[in-house]
Image (tube, rainbow, N blue to C red):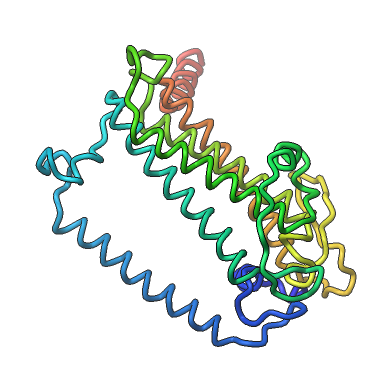
Length: 294
């Protein structure tokens, strides 16, 4: 599978689906079930979007003050409401981590060392987690990886509960976000976070063979620097125009992260009050000045 340039199927194989053994699917029925579930859920999500767009109120504050929907109405200058919503976001992120850890514990994930699916018990060693902050690219233990996700689950769940139950302490000033927070500001910081995770994913995919096994994603990549940084395959058995799934994933993540970073700067400057239309007006003024001088 590693030399076929696949992207989605190796992820399913890594989760232990499809009866994966030594990089080969032995039970495609499981893959069919996953595809059908995604098709059904896409219809459910689409129906939910249509329902909210055409039947429910346009603004959450239109609902009675005692309703659940009203609790999530958005106001940039209401710190208690902002922290309440943030808490729920953190709980959902924690739930995703818990689901992954429990899946690995009870169902199992693909272990490239044995070429088979095995159950993985998380290693919740705080010393290990602390030491892997900067050398995470060299992690070679599935137990350590699951331990990191378990720690994140606990950390995010604790943060979510804290933000839901607590309220703003003291004056809500500019240091805390008063008159600073805006849609542009939040979009800017969100794009910065997305860019960071994209860069990390690119580096990890290019070099790590524990969570990105060779028999699923192909050989590790070689870094090159041309007009822009990029990674190339090191497998000499590939055809001239063929690429591994690892090459696709790494390069796409890197360039998506790059453009996310540009979006971060763009929206960050807009949040600070910079009007990009002034650049066009500047050039227009320069052209009119040159014309009058001539």
